[in-house]
Length: 325
Image (cartoon, rainbow, N blue to C red; front, side, top):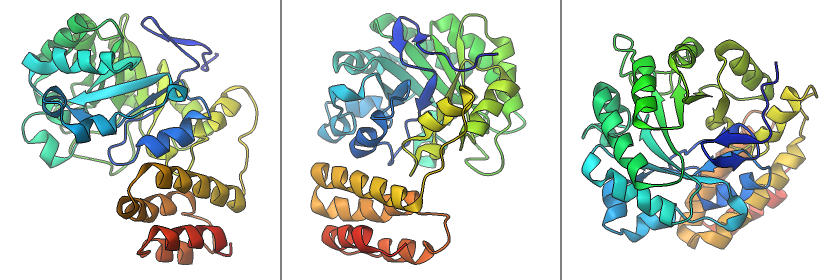
């Protein structure tokens, strides 16, 4: 069976392929998108923005949505639980030139779920349908939704939410094979994704959870029958993972990359950070992204220790350039 689809259609949006990059809060920022877009994933989602902040024109929120034309196709993701402003927020995403708008029903963080947003919406499936209906009515671009399997193991309702989302007009649903209670602990249960595939009629199902390699992506397709794969934490320090997945799905071996190649990629990524961020923020970002690229190889523990304690962006740049691998 051919799992790789080139091109891939999400509603009327024509995408290069069916391997997508996730909207990781605090990670998938503009420099991240500069790095990853060169490898041409089927779709890159920006990190989520709050509906309320968007409609009141909060400048920090718009900065989260910065993108360059080279990053198309690109998706914007909104989070919130108020259907009265969902359509307006979705239209603003469309007016900014995004190719797709997504509703976040998956974020497990307390400050998001406390008002019923993010994965808190898994407790109110009918409200998900109401919000999606407002979004679909307001825009011409495809509307998608990202969910968890359920709030906890006693309330697995992802198949029900799949049907509700389809009826509301969403063209695709991303299913993360964990509950909100699990957060990111334990293994993702891909059987729950399979349940959503079985429940779907027209809506496309995008599998998400523990896709860290080309082999894992192939196994997800085989296990679940999903239409596309969304890679989240697997993209961190591996902007090229879409190419790894495409290579495996095309019958080629996954390319092995050296530590030096990882260092060069980290250096390039950090230079994009320096071009985009204020110096203080760039220093903080160095501590974060430095550990993505050089995280599991022998001899890199000292690098991670040092990069996590840099005080200036110049110190970070010098360390990345000159650390002995």
